[in-house]
Length: 241
Picture (cartoon, rainbow, N blue to C red):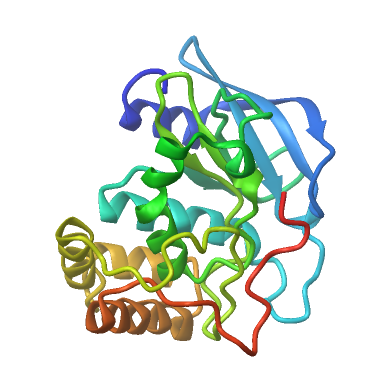
């Protein structure tokens, strides 16, 4: 990731956006943009709210803000899985999320990961449990040239009802490590009403969704293990890649 994160966030927040192309995969309009600020340029991924396909079970025009919420949760956990992401009111096609583009090999995905890389996905699976990710496809997990794990596409996360759909069920029934438990304990404290994180999430999600996030955190701390797929719900996204 070029530069330090605070500088990247500043460029994303205040930079001029130049649309360079459109990503043709996915259900919603997604654009490749150049972001220019104070003679610095980054490549970004811009998802305008008006390009979101309406969903029956998620509030309209809410997906872009969920992308930002996922970034904030990743940062609070200390895992830095989600590329720097901001919400821009002044995008070229209206308000939407703007995320740093991560250089990666698109042919290397969950279904082709080496065994050692698959074993690194425990915190990724826990992250998806926390945010109630309804669409963790195999292509949404990226490795950059330095081997850092990045996670993208969190627009249909944080629903108050159970919606988890993911390709990562490798660790079902396994107990959390002490390190994962410690991260959860810290995160639980950061979610308390009145904290910075709680206040920021309140601006991005519905109040019931923030409460549901706190409840899922408490439940995971109680069980301290990765759950099995629910027998009466569809556990996998479609398509899986």
